[in-house]
Image (tube, rainbow, N blue to C red; front, side, top):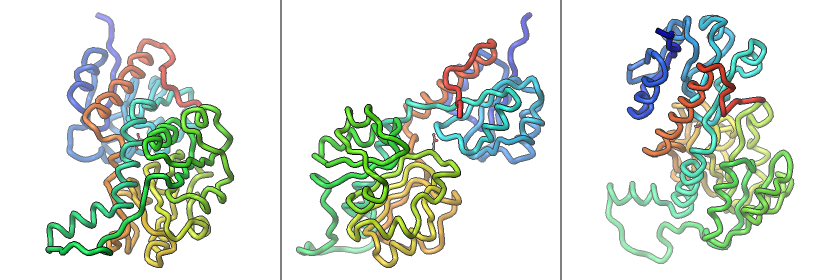
Length: 321
Ligand code: GLV
């Protein structure tokens, strides 16, 4: 009988993904309710033809060595791949894939959820309702208008574009900044390309949609927060280290900006000292793609990449950078 490919899966994924995987290969999975430890990862990948990994698995030269030269692919369950040493993989002829597109809506939606929650103080109101009573007053829990305001989108890729397009229902003026102007972004959103400093100065809401790279680490720090309006809100659903979280805490404490909505953190799962004591921040635990449908679809994309690699075909979602 023909040998089936052997795959290591670093964390149990939703059932439809495991079922699909069973159809195409033999696999071993870390079934613990926590990420694989480094030792488990190094042991688990040994002798495999492909590995299905998560964004909290650090994939580097030591892991490629442990896997062995027959290992063709590391398929990341997620669109971001800053957990993976891609240049080292390419030097060795190892394929890296991610799961783009299927999570655009879910991730853009969580950015909107955070924008609304922060602007209209939803989480603060929820906490108040559970702990005390209130009496309606003209200046009680005032938030910020959203309709008709200026939305600044940093990063004009698939998720940034999706997020910006959804602002149409709120008649917002869209500014965007990135490495270069994007005709697609402009066609879909009516957005105007501006230098980042101008975007920071002009926007009422600034939302981050860039990948984490050496260039984007601390893209938003003390200087950039200082350029923003005192009434502005920062939204981050990209990667935590894109923002200097210590500087953000200081900016929120001193009301240099009005608020922040964060789904990602610099040192997950921890948050910077002082952040959780602030009422003008709304936080969610890195759940950008966490919907029932999206998490299944991400897995099916990862499995399609594995199936291709096991057949010796180039996987559809190759990371080329
Ligand atoms: C989630 O953060 C992802 O990169 O898909």
